[in-house]
Image 1 (tube, rainbow, N blue to C red):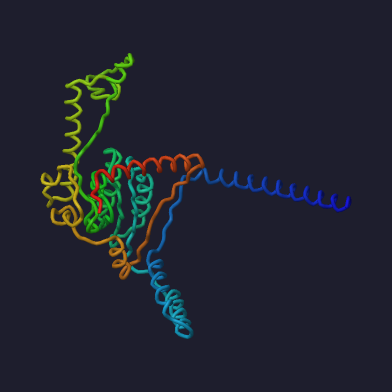
Image 2: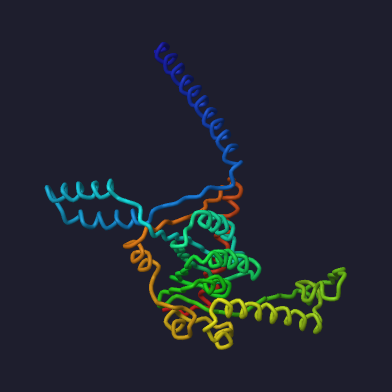
Length: 337
């Protein structure tokens, strides 16, 4: 019995030593890999959408075949894949999902730069866009990235499956063609700036708040201080000026649109947007890509940002908060069926 216990003890200690050594090696390797990856901000990924569509269709076809028929079909598919020749026409597909600060613009600028470096005059660009809008300066930059494509005279199509409102529509209007799903949301050509004020609450609790400024309108309205009529008026003038810039931007890219009639801050569904001239055609992005894949190579281009563990955790927490706020806001603003 003593010998058995000694043997078991030795085996247990050996396992512990082995596990510890293995863990140390794994940690060391991950640290080296993380150090190498930290030096790279991100990487570009390119996928041939045609292959994904063909693979899905093939699975459906094979589901109804058995025996020799199935073998013959797979043999035919292998032969087609081996003999496949790249098509002359190429369609580059980008995805943009916008938050309040249009943070996806960092990936968008990399994607646009990459495709502009290789695109030929015969190529086209399709952007699948989803955004309810946000900060004017951020969406102005995002729209400018799409304008780079227009400036190179590459045909640009924007597909809206769910929403392209306010700053999202600012981006969409840059396109040669806007294609929207029937019940997507478009428009909202307006400017809003909610400014809560806690001055009276602080005053009731005996708290003074002062801001030293140089410049008459360095601060127009504030969160903690007492706002003046002059400050409010100036702030409103700034909002009106931004609105005029927004309308001028839309008019530049969609000259046939009656901007004054639609720049009321209202939004419309795709069906009504087509009647007003906000969109050019009704369809989903799936319809568009399937149609294009029949005559061109459709390449999905995406830039993946590398993030540290802390950045991923922070981003995840921020995303949860933002989704909760957007969900609550959508329930207040969007008709429910």
